[in-house]
Amino acid sequence: MKLVRILPFARMLLEKAVQPGNIAVDATAGNGIDTLFLARLTGNGGHVYAFDIQDEAIATTSHRLQSEGMRGRCTLFQTGHENMKAMIPESKFEKITAAVFNLGYLPGGDKTIATRADTTISAIEQLLEIMAPEGIIVLVIYHGHPQGADERDSLLHYVSNLPQEQAHVLQYSFINQVNHPPFIIAIEKR
Image (spheres, rainbow, N blue to C red):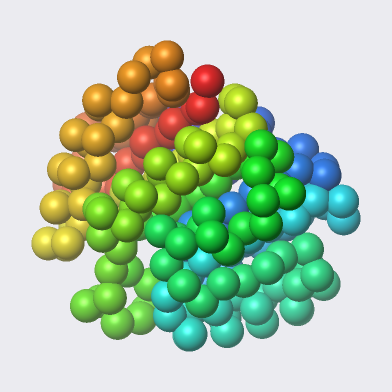
């Protein structure tokens, strides 16, 4: 297949946004895969702030980073991403060049604990306030479960109404696949 699949496309966007020395955010640490990816991109001089409400996710992410020698490049917060502005030091505001969200529930975890549109929208609003110009927010939306469908609809409504003077918004999806394939919304701050 020559078309770029969803997760590689998300990584491609993040690679365009993050240079060594930058600050990045993983808004849904989950199993730590994106946190580690961002830590590699930010390099020794940069930093990643990662958020998750589940202790299992924070422990798994910490272990993954430790085993790769990247733990020192990251700060992990066991709290919701809607608290990021209060948790990220103000000295890092305007230096954040990328953020990633993998929405839904923790793979292999409790499916009753899932991201919600209200907290995700709050986090996006905070990021648009504190990110550097041209910073990119990548939302990978998994919507094949009841909470995911509600979150998808609310997020599409929200991002469709962002003023174009504030942000560019892209939707990337495969429209003929079965079983509610994930898709991407990317927001570039202007």
